Length: 254
Image 1 (tube, rainbow, N blue to C red):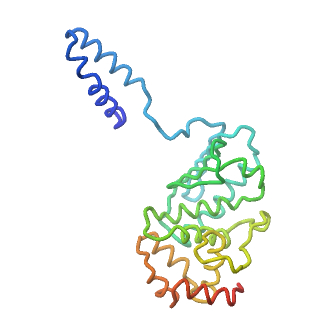
Image 2 (cartoon, helix red, strand yellow; image 1 turned 90 degrees about the horizontal axis):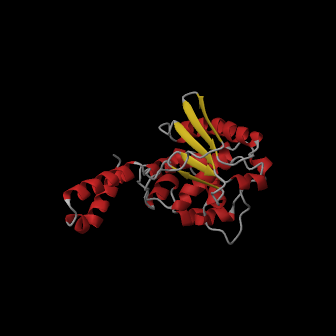
């Protein structure tokens, strides 16, 4: 029995203890039998990847992609592009940042999901409506699978670094950012280094070009090993992030 089933038995017994104490032995036995049957036929709650329109498993060079589509009428071309982009970028990201990254990844195309995409462990959920509106934004895949490579868990580092590195990876390894109209933003006075996503990714690009060529790789490793502190900035670049930002906005060319 699963943990969920065992818990159900305990609760059922406790809730009915006073009642069953008053029943004759035969009635008590009948109650126990009927309760056991009911418990045995009640499915345990599981992550619902079993209801789908299309499911496929693709393997290339030791990496497996489980592709689950829950959207009826999804473009065959889109499915192919999602899969092709995964196999184009994921091995490169693993090699560049984390060779111990998951070897099995799941993609779920789910119309019930309202965001753009979300990653948990080695599972990425995509909203098909996003691709209806932005058919060329295929490098959403690159950003999301970088989160799998990051594998930070309960890191002590800030989230803006996590998302900044993911967009830096998209900038560096993306297969068609130009086709999607996706680029790093121009610098403005209202921005700050901890704005995350593309703003932070551009800042990291400048740091790589001007301070430390291995900055992103080293910061990524620190985040994964839960060793983050403000002191790592000085160790990696010689300055605090605020000092770097001041220098950056004065001369932001990349």
